[in-house]
Length: 336
Ligand code: AMP
Ligand code: TRP
Image (cartoon, rainbow, N blue to C red; front, side, top):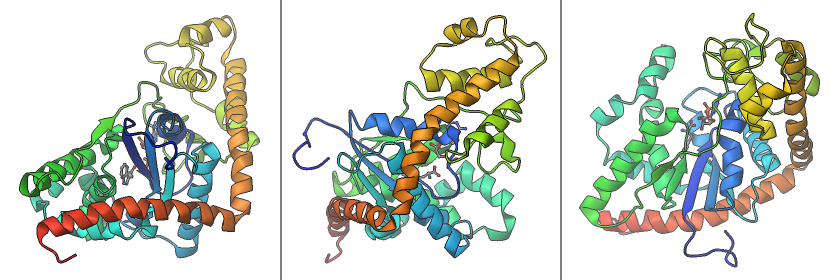
């Protein structure tokens, strides 16, 4: 999105990801791969949403390492700072500022209905903090500051995007057109990757069983081992079918990585058992992640360069965000 390539016709897309731990194959195939592709069609703004992460208590050194690591991974998968704006949320103070303002235009009742808040506060009864409650307001600020047209999000974030839209419509109703009302962007491709140990659940890094998920930075040995142990069924036939959640999932992964259709995959493994199939799926994952791991190693080895990239992104982001924040505050009456 630099000044020479920016065109008035391109729509703006924005998304953020929390630096809350190892990113998984599920994050990659379900969301991040799509972020990379969107760079061809949209002006993209991507952020590491570190302010969101402290709704859960973090160990400082580990948290800092995860922020760096997430930044390096986003570059390693192919987000391109020459085309897109990449930055760390806490580097742009306007997020916290607009979040306060928008919080005063959001009702306690509507926040109380958020299913993620209800889930998380039930699961972490010992730390139901106000940040966890008002988290969707910060997310609305992330989006509205950049006048984003489209926000690629997974199903779990749709309700939060709805709130961002409601807040934008309400604010615009009071003060005129200040914010672009964002649309969800649901990619046509993009897999929902399931746990390798319980394929009825989605693959998640918070699963206690590490064999259930593959991290983008897992070693080839780990990946092969986890694939070999993946839960399947007793039919020994590689095909899509009911009651074959494990095999369906592996076919989905293999399809997303190789571009082959499920029918082609069924033909490829016709007459062969699960041993060969799991081996081949494992190899496809290893090969897909190998260049990511290699590029990651380069980026993480040069912290100064990594920081320079993200600071430059934050400067560009701050200009756009500052314009929106200023406009919103002046409309309210602040002498800003
Ligand atoms: P999370 O890791 O749950 O914070 O999710 C970050 C992004 O990755 C969201 O857009 C999710 O929808 C997506 N995502 C996470 N896990 C999976 C999965 N197993 N399959 C597909 N997409 C996923
Ligand atoms: N809440 C999102 C998640 O947990 C991350 C996020 C923060 C986000 N701000 C955002 C996503 C703005 C899209 C747009 O996955």
